[in-house]
Image 1 (cartoon, rainbow, N blue to C red):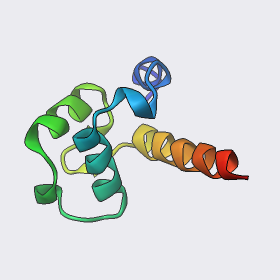
Image 2 (spheres, rainbow, N blue to C red):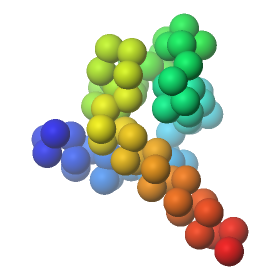
Image 3 (cartoon, one colour):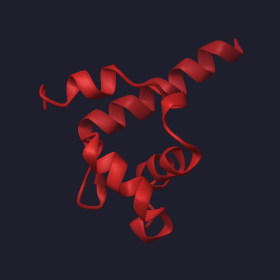
Image 4 (cartoon, helix red, strand yellow):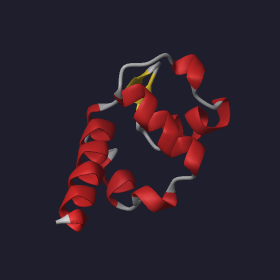
Length: 75
């Protein structure tokens, strides 16, 4: 997993387009991959954020960090 780390550390949530963000949210919620945009899935696979139809551990951490950052910003 360390080989994926530089890619995700180099991107932010805002670097992803709306469809890519939506795909991460859908997969993170355990919903069907068929609800996701195919082009978004290809980019997320290229970034190492999904394998098959599941988020990688790196992607789960990325998603978690985004949610926590958003909650901190609201305080």
